[in-house]
Length: 318
Image 1 (cartoon, rainbow, N blue to C red):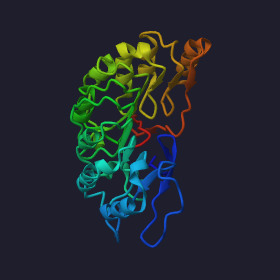
Image 2: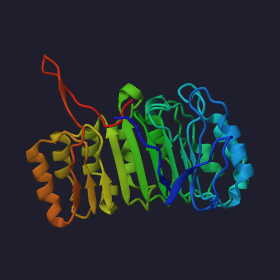
Image 3: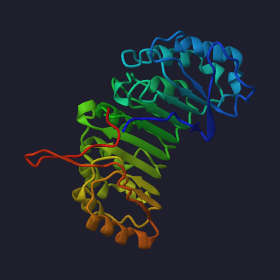
């Protein structure tokens, strides 16, 4: 599966794309929408930074609450360092900014695992009042351990999340973080983390406010499930999301054999490779306690070679 739709909202605000150079923006309150600033991934007539300059000239940026960074030119070759520099340089123009998403591109613009990224922590350092931050694309992605006192939601969408990024997030002090969503991906696209890299996150020591945890889209989903089964942070979660990955009966059995999950409001396992008996076991264990369970198999289909080798896939790879 590929990413087929742009973000339709951020920070509870509907997304609105700032128009191209030949069009005028429709009348809209600067704080009423999440502004998408986007260029062209191919044959760009205008650089992203030029679109951003037009945006700053046309809109009262002191009232802007949410920004979405869309396509930039040659994203399959160029990282957004220049974009990050422009955003950091303009930080005093955005005193109300509370949400930022970097890399809102669909497959036609640039497949998720071909989006070039860079170290994104300068953005968090420049905007200490940010409450939501998201990034798409793992190639070249960096995340240096930091302290951020306001961040409530962190989303990292990749087809392969580098282990150093997982460790950077795990080593960060994020006392206000309520939601963490990591797409771990596959080694084919740079997802080289191991369950041990998740330990600082699963301990919850630096994440005292965490209530919603998603560790998904992973080729090692069974091992992740086994690690989660004994993780201290789970006892205070409201929702747990292990969806989109290669979860089999082995991982689900380990999850059910660990600490109780009956306190959860929801367990999301959609896109999985569980047998019918194991799915029934999950339902019978959790649904009577009031846990909403998502066991939609979706498009999780197996392929088998003539020699009997079975191939299973994450939901979002390339």
